[in-house]
Length: 259
Image 1 (cartoon, rainbow, N blue to C red):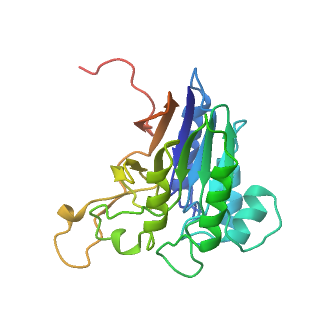
Image 2 (image 1 turned 30 degrees about the vertical axis):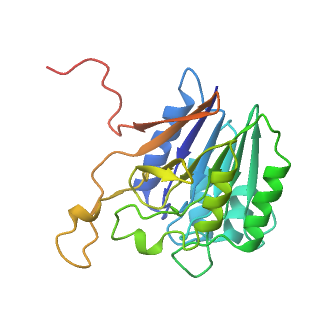
Image 3 (image 1 turned 90 degrees about the vertical axis):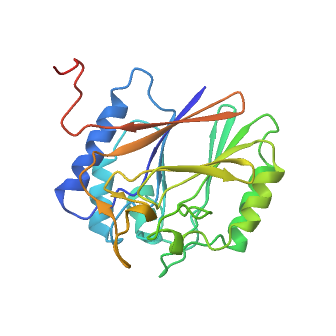
């Protein structure tokens, strides 16, 4: 069994609120009797891509666990690389492969600098094809990206989702090793099918954005800062993806039923 924790849309902004929410999530993960094999942070790590925001993120996300950071549309590739990855601050797509026993995670950069919507470049799609060619036949494969590749009934995120999902969907449908696709960006959990596999969209650690049914008037953003932070825990076993959503209470665990 491989256990992966997914955090998304942390939006570090140099204020305390979002940092404290991430710190609570990281403390929860660190204290688990069975800790994750890796933690995936699937984009919009910062709010505006400033260096100080990445430094704040690095402090809050410190862990003695395998970590992977992906850019979202609010991020800056160069800053993410320099501060979080300790790599030269280059600006090209940040595609990564995470190899775990019996499981490979393909982390795709769906960002387009200067735009809010997403796109998988020809280079990224070629990188994915090459990575799959080099992946053992017995491995299960999970594909991760920031932008959802399908509409998710969000008036905020659907107009800025992945704009070219068709090549990825064909690839997913054609490879039996792929157990699912995960993303962020939506600030709400959602699930559907993509290429015949589960598509699981993660909630945001920072806030919640409601669906189209919560929009009372044109242009309204149904955002809610009230809920506690939520994350996803993905289990991959026997070529099957199981996903559990976990809300981390900012006020701490209550282990005895209130009366």
